[in-house]
Amino acid sequence: MILVTGGAGFIGGNFVLDYLANPKVAGLVNLDKLTYAGNPETLKTVEHDPRYHFIQGDIGNVSLVSDLLEKYAITAVVNFAAESHVDRSILGPSEFIQTNIVGTFHLLEAVRIYWEKLSTGSKESFRFLHVSTDEVYGTLSLSDPAFNETNPYEPNSPYSASKAASDHLVRAWHHTYGLPVVTTNCSNNYGPYHFPEKLIPLVILNAINGKSLPIYGDGQQIRDWLYVKDHCSAIRRVLELGQLGQTYNIGGWNEKTNLEVVRTICQILDTIKPKQNGSYADQITYVKDRPGHDRRYAIDASKIERELGWKPKETFDTGIRKTVEWYLANTDWTQSVLSGNYQNWIDLQYSSNAK
Ligand code: NAD
Ligand code: DAU
Image 1 (cartoon, rainbow, N blue to C red):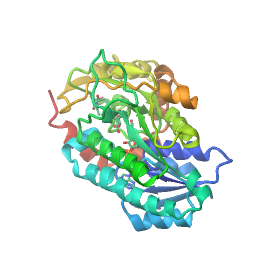
Image 2 (image 1 turned 90 degrees about the vertical axis):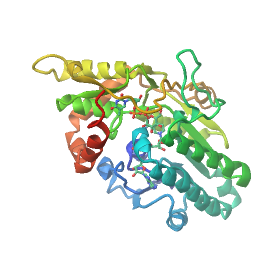
Image 3 (image 1 turned 90 degrees about the horizontal axis):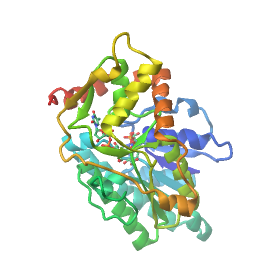
């Protein structure tokens, strides 16, 4: 039985669904605070699976986490829970410090106290897998090699600084207390159940709803896109085979400028859901740039391929088409997300954002 934190979010939700799709697994406990980013709708299909246990709560609540670890005799923890949106971290960093740093600290302490009391065999096989980001490495120029696991940490946003701090805590709990940890640093995910404050789902939904497609700055920033199901399979592989104390970079080998991404989405929509007049690309609008906007991220994912035999299955072309089709076919899910609360964020972020 494993404990997943943040399993009602985008990546955690996909992980829970994929994990339980394997009939051989014993089950999982999903601890999620259900912030604005957590959506139980994502998990509707597993709600009644007896192997699935949902607990609403905070990773920073040591007594709750301790009780769950004991009650379910947890053998591994996968920590997805975090505040994850860079723009929100710029407008209000406090929650990012609280969950990503203080919350991770409390989670690590609860897990350490539990782990120290396990029998020798259980102690050896126990794992704490911390899910982190490529943003901790900072930004690249066009000619720099992609980030590998030895790159120095140079985070630039409140979000990435808080994730970097959490990575350091995880590392220290291994070196000091021997906690059996592994950390993964992955690039930008995309795919089903992605909250539409992030570029790809925002653009798909704005396009079909006749709204503008906001491009920050000149749109030449580069991200390295990873299909979320590939990310989930990589995490399962690291959980199974990852070496203690090691970090693994996970990426899709898909570097694209933001403008390329948005134009590709428009081309797919032009083919499968054509507008009466013109192209969806006509809705592209340039808006004010993100403060401190990192220019380029790229992941060198050769260590996980070489040492653990994992590589992504999807190319950007196959993954983005599946993603656009998923959003067109799952309007119930998108309606559940496009609530008043979501609208408040869009007003705050974009109303005064014209270039
Ligand atoms: P998300 O924002 O979609 O989901 C985060 C989930 O964590 C939500 O369900 C939320 O309710 C929950 N949560 C937040 N604070 C919590 C707390 N204090 N206690 C318990 N639950 C809490 O995030 P995501 O995009 O799924 O990202 C998951 C993880 O992967 C994060 O750690 C993020 O930093 C990392 N990551 C994400 C990406 C990406 O492209 N989305 C890329 C690299 C790394
Ligand atoms: O690199 C991994 C990171 O990817 C994760 O750690 C973060 O949790 C995740 O949110 C994501 O961060 P980004 O800032 O790269 O993702 P976002 O979708 O917010 O933005 C992608 C790019 O698109 C970025 O260069 C900003 C730009 N952008 C974004 C939005 C929302 C726009 O041009 N317009 C927009 O409206």
